[in-house]
Image 1 (tube, rainbow, N blue to C red):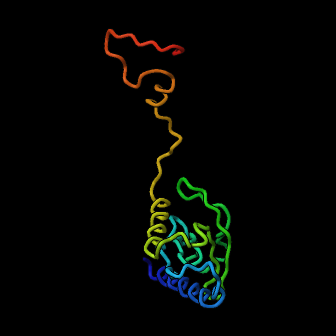
Image 2: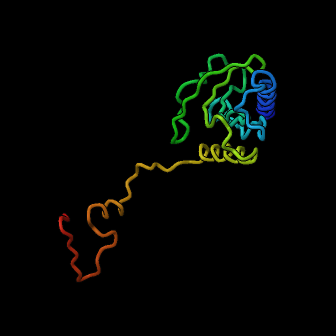
Length: 166
């Protein structure tokens, strides 16, 4: 991880630990077996922004933030990430600065422990970062089947005719 990216991810954890200890103190939806952890932060392709997952005892969010002071960087709104279109909401914490979030889970009570939450976060990131094959590409063999034609041509001398086939 890039040095400034690692520092920003650590700062994000610090800020949200402080939020847990102050603003979230006593809130019943906190999962007692979870703690704040930044997972898999990396620079977005071709942008001066980073994306990763923030796991807390009360939510799991995709988080985007600028890697340098860039007031003209738009963080919120719809973002195309591979085959997925994600909606981000702008946020700001005075100690951290501007960032945007996309909710993955809240509350976190369905997770058994920190390992399960982090494994989910890593899987989300792996899915987002993996190259996708266009699922709209028709499979010619499937089309033949759906039209009542065999995917494998009949042996020579055999005639196969289905009722209603073209």
